[in-house]
Image (cartoon, rainbow, N blue to C red; front, side, top):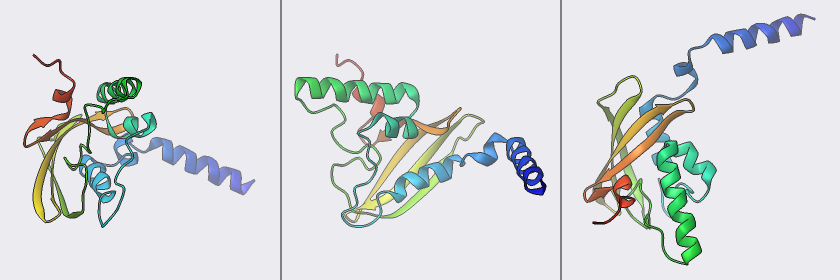
Length: 155
């Protein structure tokens, strides 16, 4: 009987915690992304599944990436995203990652990720959005272009 009371109390306490206490802040979210790229011969994030896309990107950006990948597979072509958006490369050996958050608001933030890839310093800017499921990437900006820009009709 005593254990039921304790379990009920714990459930009430967990439900009473603010949502922000249960989800990582934007900096932690981005740092966790880049942890997947540290070291030699690491696979990085697997962005080939819809589940992974939904965990890392906003629904609208995940839809664009997923739709393009399926269309490219159907046509037996390479997708528009033909590399890893988080490291702006097809191959990597990432060291010295650093994440800074700028322009943080209630539901939006900008993350600046700086790291070395094969010794060369790279900076990637990520537009973040707070969704009901936590922080997600809404766009990725590289020196030459951005992720959403890949999916805009060419004129």
